[in-house]
Amino acid sequence: MITLGQYINNNSFGHRLDARVKILATVILSLLIFQARGWEIFLISSFVFIVCFICRLNFFSIWKALQPLVWFAVLLFALHLFFTDGTVLFTAPYLPVEITAEGLSRGLIIAWQFIALALCGVLLTMVTSPSDLVHGLTYLLGPLKYLRVPVQDIAVMVSMSLRFVPTLLEEYDRIKQAQIARGSAIETGRPARKIKSLAALIIPLMVSAFRRADDLTEAMEARGYARGPRTTLNQQHFGREEVFALLVLGVLLSLVLTSQFLRAPFP
Amino acid sequence: MIKINNIFYQYEGSAAPALSDISMEIHEGEYVALTGSNGCGKTTLIRQLNALVRPDRGTVTIDGLDTADPANHKEIRRLVGMLFQNPDNQIVGMTVEEDIAFGPGNLNLPPQEIRRQVHDILESFGLQSLAGRAPHTLSGGEKRLVSLAGVLIMNPRYIAFDEPTAYLDATGRRRVLAMMKQLHKKGIGIIHITHDAADMADADRLLIMNRGKLIRDGHLRDILCAKQENTGFTLPLPPITELIRHLNRQGWSLTPDIFTVEEAGREIHRLLTRAR
Image (tube, rainbow over all chains, first blue to last red; front, side, top):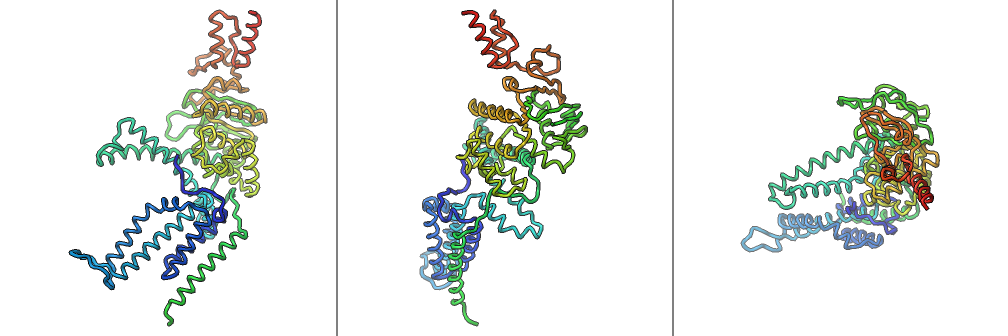
């Protein structure tokens, strides 16, 4: 069975927290990650790991979610390591490659920033259900409606897209099996033939997606959907736990900002 | 009461009308089966009841509300629930409870009230354990029940079912049909599109369509007992009727006009008692 996202509710502090607070925390942490230097890196990393621990997340699942991104982090590290000027630490024999102290530290920081940023995103999706995420975002983007941005309609569109991702993946699988049964070379042929037979997969999938979209529009209309404001089942709650979480986040923010203020040269 | 008055409807770009000269009434609490060959206009007709399409000519009124007036659409869609052929395309929420809450959300009910109603309906359907499940993880029968719960939460007076037992196994089929009978008992008007003659036997009335026209309107028994006119559509006999007629041809003296299992049971019991 196809599963969407990595959210499994284990009713931890992080899972219970209001989605708006979690989104806000993710945004603030992401901004801090880009500003962090020296001991701030250690502080933010420890904070994120403590949050993972509090949320009782399985570290293997986190690693599995991060795995596809690790190669990109390695590439970022290598680029900075090999192409940054500075104090030479090592020169490769017979190769025009020099490793500098600045390159090493910069590469490590950039790779860390990237992984930490990805970890924040993974953390958010692991402790927040897709629907809570959409509702939280809808609330936070609420002020945009004064600029005539149809925030609620966008929220319905996003949740609908998320709802149909597994259905379309199942459909893709069904069409693929049907094409293989009829002798298609999707899995076994040469690359050129594979690409050619991909068209026989994509076109029916597109047709089916459009047909589904038509049926879905009708079903939504039949259930009284019309553009404009509507209420939802999800109730936003802002209690003691949310206040506590924001306070902790505030302390972290002040620590990092104070450190940066002290580090900055006085005019 | 649903009142259809001489309607005509043609899809854009289509050579022939999808519906023509159709007039009928469906009363509150009535169980109406609707049948006919594929493409004869059954689905188009029930889409008229929910104001998803409006007639080119003629009128459709639901409890006095004209479907041609957009101001009536919200109320009409509350009054007439629709269950589509494929529940996969009807379930819009990311979880079961969110999907059921979709209709009340469209009526702008407060979240606490929506939660209460969703809780009640999940309990009455015995679906509490599925509340947080994603729709694609449900079985066909469960999906059908979830879409029905999503319709019932709107407190409709009529529900149109478009082949509700399609894609279902025997257990799912029995469950859905039992649920429909229960709703009928509660006084909800049922419009049931079906090709299965056994399902038609439960209906108060049977409507037969052919090429966009309503060709028969009556009780299954009367339609099957009456001389079949050449209307271009042959109504299949319920399997139990076929069995009884077969036994009759074999020399057993059974009444040939039997259309339900209960009637057949009584008739066979009568025969066996006499033979003993």
